Length: 440
Image (cartoon, rainbow, N blue to C red; front, side, top):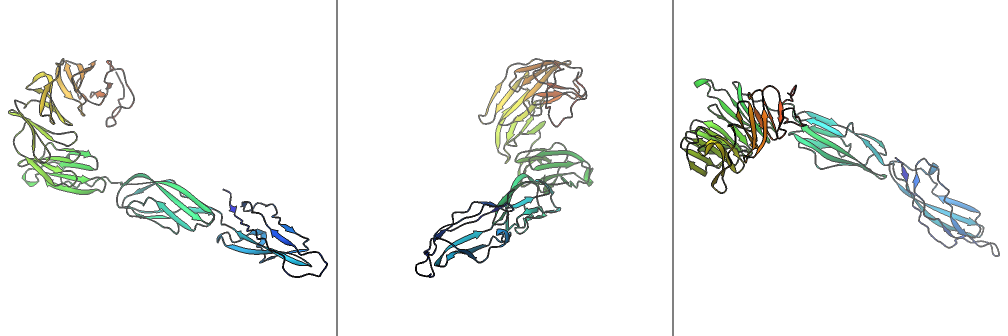
């Protein structure tokens, strides 16, 4: 980086002053300096030659220039110099203002990507070369618990919460200019949760910044607990007794089994929203947490998280295999028939039946995007609207499941929906599953 010296010349035209002998040469007049060019510290400059009228026998300057036209590289002090051109008849003067700026700062941090640990003391100091820094600043404000020293540019403190990787701009300034450095800072937690359950954990569900855990009941001595956690702060949101079995967490809603039915909680506050009473063959929380659905031998029901009924229909749904999608319930093996899908629209309060499918219904994909039927080890894959998208011959149906455009079996094979052959493998299978060791 070039270190610049700024020199400003203010030309002043003055008439001769001082007297001389009569009949001699007139005194000098109109002494003037042109504007100075931008100069670089340590580099020779071209002479600054003035213009003047008359014959000059002597030039003087007051005060004297610093050696090598150098002033303090750290102060940027401006001084005023008066140049006098004279002869025996008189003199003329010009004022020359010279400002020498400090070299611009050069700032380097140990790394532009900084990863800190929540709860651990941090100290990140920069190295500054070039001109001395007069002021430091950073934008935006650092994560909670961290401070920025405006005298040294040091980041210090103890972060109190996690923070996604975000850009922060540090600016170092002096009279010679400024330097900006962009730092990417994130705060992570080395420990996700200290669950603190007294017995082995049976279920662990995550949704956004919330995690719901359940442990194993041990009779009357320990009925079991369900605990809702904030994974950003590692704080316990709520802890309550639960009776074991199925739990659910999605978006704003958590559902746990209780002595009087299903206890519905707000996932943000942990406060009870409703208790859904009754005996049901199965129940599900919607994929977006917007409702709870349940089936029994007498009917199909759905409730809002506050316990308000949003749908009910009579019929034997005790053996149904349903998926609670956003805004609709997809029902297989219900009273509409064993080879069709019933779709219940909650907003309209209506029910429709899709086209017939082949084979015997086997399972829904985990995201409800598809379902599969089978005859022996021949598998049909359908969209949720009962459109056939694949037909595959497998060696086993053990452990079969799917998500998105992929399905798999317990022997380690993963298949692409729509390939029609099991040897077709495409990139980027679902991240929650290990890639297969081989493909048949």
